[in-house]
Amino acid sequence: MNINHLTLILTQTTTSPEGKPKKASRRFTQLKTDASREDLKAFSQMIEKLTGEQYDTIELTTSENIQ
Image (tube, rainbow, N blue to C red):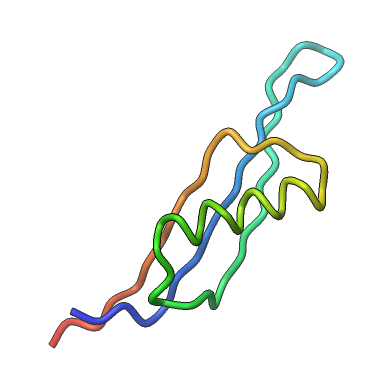
């Protein structure tokens, strides 16, 4: 199987003034398909520094060709 698409979803959960949980996500597509988990963690840490956000969930979605 070959990975042909890689998507990283960074999610931050905060509490609204009413006390309800709110989720905000950032999605990054078309990343290098051979990126390691360490590369993706470093990328998410850079995004945290740039945005000032703290992500509590990091999701990785891949698409593969099955032949």
